[in-house]
Image (tube, rainbow, N blue to C red; front, top):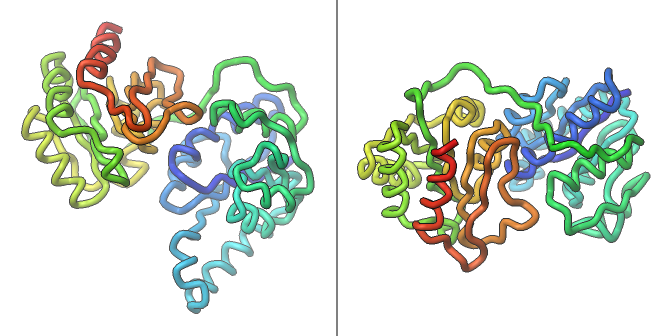
Length: 316
């Protein structure tokens, strides 16, 4: 049996879909799983040994120039890859019209959420079969339940298994290290730099070298200022796979509400997620190790709250 997972974006959402793959393979050994994902996040499903083929999608780029010759050629090439294999199920874990658009390009029945369960109800009209999954469930659990419903096995009652291994290669952080993720896509997500410096100083005193990761040059400047205040290190620009290697080997992670924080927790590292403009609720930090999601929309966590949680992790 062959299944195509459609979960394209964002990074945290892709991470939250990983346990569904582990469940499928546990319930149906021998199942072949492929994954359609936005190209910047393709390294994440590749971390799971159960994913056979990863099909990178560049929709964010293509939609800006749909009629350009190179865009049309790239879209045609991906469509050809999607139709190269016959799938027994094309499982749309995204639940959006854009994921339906590409799921329909694959050769096989498109399956997804029911009308009452989905973010964009119009997308449900295109599914061959639908399944009802309560919307109030945490994102990992929603993915697991949808997969179980469509592939015909009982909903697992064990903890989520993200099934990923730490990749080799890339920039090597000092050992032992802790990773700080102080950068985010929106200014409203940011936590004050002086608080990051205080966290870094505490990690230094615990014998852990703070490593500050970044993704753009303004973010690098922010990371360098924080590192200068706490004796931390700022690596060069790292790919997603290279960052995953750093996260997977760290003793502690403290990060904003970003995909890398979710990826760190999936590896099992003790992880503290700092939320400043979004409720963690259904998409909080989840993983097999000690995790905590602090703050919320309009509720920036105080330094003392983060430090108290950090002290609990350092005692482990």
